Image (cartoon, rainbow, N blue to C red; front, side, top):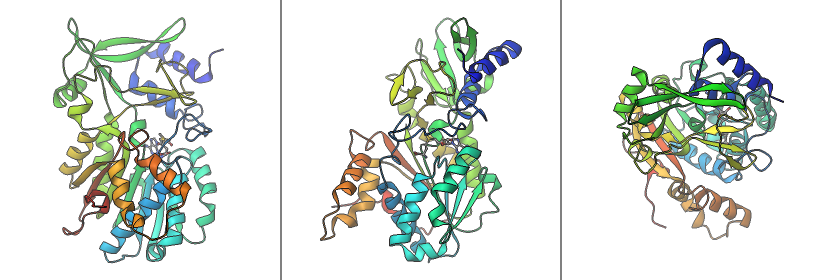
Length: 373
Ligand SMILES: C[S@@+](CC[C@H](N)C(=O)[O-])C[C@H]1O[C@@H](n2cnc3c(N)ncnc32)[C@H](O)[C@@H]1O
């Protein structure tokens, strides 16, 4: 029997005609009741549908705490100092970050406020419950998005993990006979099917801007909300750093002739599935981040790009002082660190994009600083 979301989307298509793919993806992931994320079911970790660097264990939060503390010190230990996460899901990374700050960074602890940007009620409830142990020591605030944060005059450490890859994408496809087309979703007896329509001017201009190759069947994703996201963030922040942790690549690699099928992927219960239109609300839809888009729009709006660093280098640089201690690191810690940095896990697939605003010119965060071990 068809799910409630399948019936709702089919009815919408019947009433209004084919649905642009990014609108289909937005409903599949974020429909208020039936969306993959909004339903509040566990999505990350072994009990969910896929693993993320956060679900690998607490080391990521510990290393981010070191980076936040280093920035706080470089700025002369201002009070308050804002930690801000968007896309925190159940709040696991924020938990690990606050835990590490409580245990190891007393100066930062006395100044830190945590701000979570979360539009979904079910996830807000889960975050409140996961972060309950810290309510006495740290002020924690929730906001729907960056614009609902009060004017940000305090320095900020803004971070996200696998947020951007879950922003909906439009799909462009090239055909020698019809030129650039945009992929829409229509109904068919078995559920949903693709229908390609001529690409409108706004999509054509993105295709030209990113020099997407005109190769028969070449399919590419374009993410409408990514530039407005970094634009708004750049405008809202007075001073601080933005760390975007995700899988993706610069545009020249993302839209390379060797990647003719794009990067749209569907995941359910730890298995890559083949049909993005099947089971809306019950499988994840994701695609790689175009890091060039974030850097160019960021720079146009006053951000400095400090680097795009793969996980293998980023976390090794931050952890370097720990390896010089006499005490051996506990085995679970080492295993978690290896999951983050090994090329077969997250080490090469995932990157940290570092962008900053109004930081002292002599300050380079450890993540962006090549290290000698
Ligand atoms: C792939 S999951 C990553 C979860 C977690 N950060 C991690 O790394 O394990 C993507 C998360 O981003 C959230 N998300 C997507 N768009 C968002 C937005 N505009 N504001 C806040 N969260 C958003 C989703 O609800 C989901 O929880």
